[in-house]
Image (tube, rainbow, N blue to C red; front, top):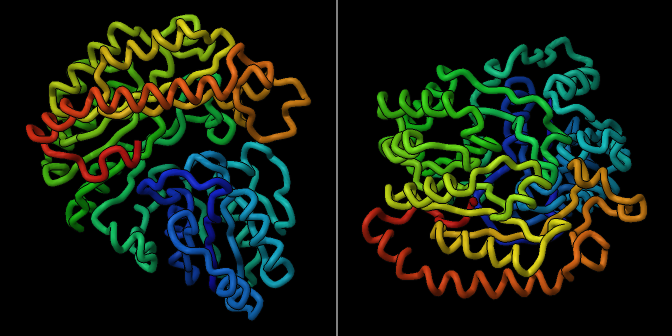
Length: 419
């Protein structure tokens, strides 16, 4: 049996950053013992329409699995291209659509033969087994720890991944029990699950033995369970599993000095913080529980420990004003982030905020906050101009600090590319 797994190209091209679909590679790894698996990741390789058409129409593949994502890998959906591919090969190969967009909408996707509507790999396994007349069916995955380590070798048919063969992703937990109203992750993953420390230590040992040097932990919030995160880092340090690596994580602001000390010992070189705003009223609107004074202290402490810090912010809450924006910009200057990502508030399908929109705005899968849409008092042009001008000024001001930090601590691989 032959399976083709396709990640379509994003609807909108964004700045390139290292990565791959962890879900696609997980599925490919599970199937690989029972199917001849081919991966096509068109988020990072050139789309070859002729190849796809010829291989599917001549019956080379027994099933096509197409991932329909939602503002994830490239901060963009890939729905348009997924539909194009399905229209090209429909009736020539059974097509299974899966992915975050399918889980959020819980609807049949376009003209796919089957749509997986729950974020459960066993639902996909059951569907695949129903297509096979052989008795050699793929077994179910009983628990999160029963998932095999992803087979990163399956990516090496891609030039992009061969060029980045010393870099990879790892997942220690899935989901997040935080309550952010703008986040669409609850739409596709409403349960927080973690691998055991033993599982994670085993996979880090696997990565170390194979010479991986740059590792992004793709957990939505690595420090959501702070005692767990600290315990894991202690064990990684005690077993010297990250001594030759550079590690990159995403975190909320509710951490402490002990965690930062452990992070530095484990060679965590970049921490990406979700702050969103320096205004308590706006944070309350986002249901983001942050003590700004403590957050600033922790970020500055991480800077002093040689960890490169990234701050993520959002403009456009209903109560946003010129004053609140300037307050956020002042907070950024005080924290001295090494990189800042400032976005316009996006009411995305799957998020609580999207559900609050009037019906006339729900015709699109996402709607930017703006005066034009009646969602804030500021125009989108004004907010974009403010953030662009501030970022330009900030990086000019911060250039010397970055240079000094790089001289003292070295530069992380692909600094600023995965935050």
